[in-house]
Amino acid sequence: MIRRLYDWTLGLAAHRNALWALALVSFVESSVFPIPPDVMMIPMILAAPHRAWLIAGVCTVASVLGGVAGYFIGALAFETIGEPVLTALGKADSFDGFTDRYNDYGAWAVLIAGITPFPFKVITILSGTTGLSLPVFIVSSIVARGLRFFIVAGLLWKFGPPIRTFIEDRLGLVFTVFMVLLIGGLWGVRYL
Image (tube, rainbow, N blue to C red; front, top):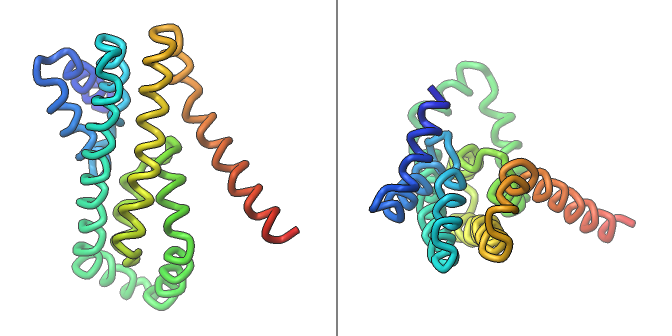
């Protein structure tokens, strides 16, 4: 089923309304859809490099708006679904402690998930569930998703088709290593 969704999403990149389809995919991927917008964005930029920045901008705006939708899914569904489950399991008190810890570092969680291959929808929903400050969530989402989509667009605009394999196979790893080094460096400066 995932392969069919992937192929369907990839096919949208060639559609005459591809930019609108990209916005839709970017929006729903941030809250519920399993296929990332990169699947459409990469072939669209390769086909029209002069539109790279527009395409990255559409991805960023739609993804952040979809993230806000995911945030509200977490905020509204927690009371009706999540809280009764935690109470039945006897974990409601420990969730309060988790919420405090998560919200202390929530901006970092959003930033890391928004840049790396970690499913962004998990963090958007969790941020709403824990009540992370909405402005903190939105700013972190704009920075993270903007970095991710504009770096990909910039690489494709500058290097064209030869960089595609690197982006598809290794860019997620590069982003992940960068975030680990950044957090490790900040931790080192703070505690050493």
